[in-house]
Image: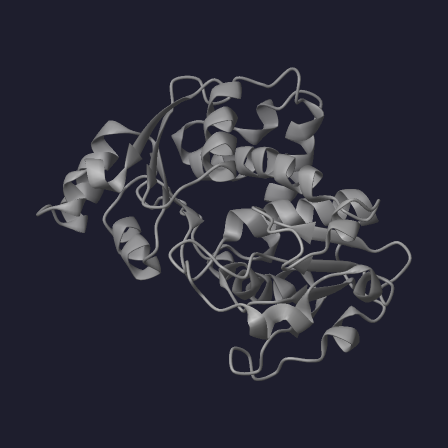
Length: 296
């Protein structure tokens, strides 16, 4: 492992050129979906969670195993870090046992601190502040469906949450326009939903009630529901995206979910392929060479 590990925590820290290269490899790895190259043979990934997970857990575990690696899954409550052990000690010990850590936790600063005390890559599986793996899968999906993302208009509807904040980080890196429509007490520069949706290439939303927010009032979000009337303001070729889980007839109407514009399952699958490429980029210092990908 290199002395300075390649972490995947904050998109701006990685940079546009590297991120675009990762996505290029993601498309290549998806093309080899049924004959995956065994580039992670002998490598192990610790997967640590303090939140429930469907897509993050399955996609990272399958990504490692399809490419020849191994995983160990831990709930934070099972680890000593939830007791008396320091983040520094946890990071040092994990660095001696595994080749990388994917961690899904609430506290973004604690994740960054963990990364400072490891000599192995730390990958942000989600925090309350950001969700970079999801945005990489989203951009991959936009590239597949619309031929590219540069110059496209993406309209975000609903809550100003971790996914939205990561879209904000991604916009200048990938050169797309981002219109945010949400309650003004959450985002002062918000525009009206109809204005955000006008001529949009992509309309995207997320649940209004994230994990740990159970009981949150949702009435103020109702004007931002993605429905057929809102989709009609976008381009005829526009797609609808949602990182899931979906609450039908809250943030999105059933009509939109059943429409040809809805690409949420392609988006979910692309978590697998984008994360394979993220892992490969992080593991490159451990001997993984992207040129080993047959045909690319």
